[in-house]
Image (cartoon, rainbow, N blue to C red; front, side, top):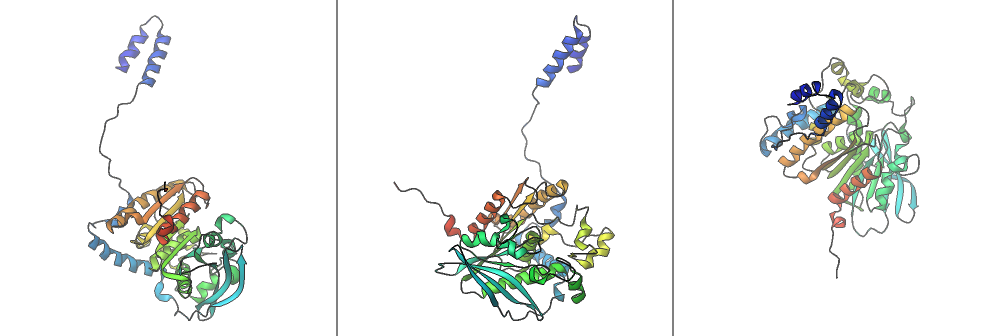
Length: 381
């Protein structure tokens, strides 16, 4: 049809005008669109449920994935858990809203961790509690308390004002335990524990922070959540997959997974902060571990998990894969019968915890830990 119109214009009295009109007519023509069923979305993340059709098959596979996860952490290399010996070094009342305590406790026989602990004033019964994990910042727990740097990341302060008991533990190479070579330098750790991993270390310590919460009369043991940004973001799902006492978790801008990641060797770099030292030879040879993030996050089900990420946080192609990954993870929560316990939010705010992200994360905590405050009511006439 279009070819005939062009030939007609070539033999017209005003071929140029005819041709321009024909082109405009072609541009204005609406495309023909036919109704259809939605096509299936296939991706490389489909291996999560490959060959699995029933809840029973999934639960059997889940045991295999958990063992792979513990092997990735080198969990068998962790030291014996010491007694807590919880000590309080400072107590401050904040704006008449909550008490903030600087505490310390044992994480190894010869090593103590510090944390800020917030307890709301006026509690009449044991409260929901949250482990708030900071990102890669030298004084991370101070930032989480709202004492330094970015108030967007002052989770302890925000959540304590909302009525939560909150613990913000220091990362093991930050705060009062910064190594001689600088913050987030793991060389000394690997000399002390040559077969363990940094991820295993911080996950184990964050699990001990849960022990601290459960030792407090102000905390309801069955209502404990976890959240964090960046390093604290992936630290959150590492913890929730590891410790089933975490009932709800939210990751904000956690790091990129192993597959489809051109910089995957950064998970096992040869200097500074080394997450998984033992993986380096295989990663440099192009071989990935036998477990990836979609499988680790799936271990959290049926407990609640929210993933918040920026499409422009680092590599856009990688972050778009994160959306496909989350679509597949949702199928696990559907298989476990709790689709309401999984969600993800994707934005264009880069590596941030801007207002909408914070509001969503805190509402996610409320919905799963304090549903009584999320109930709506009709207005009485």
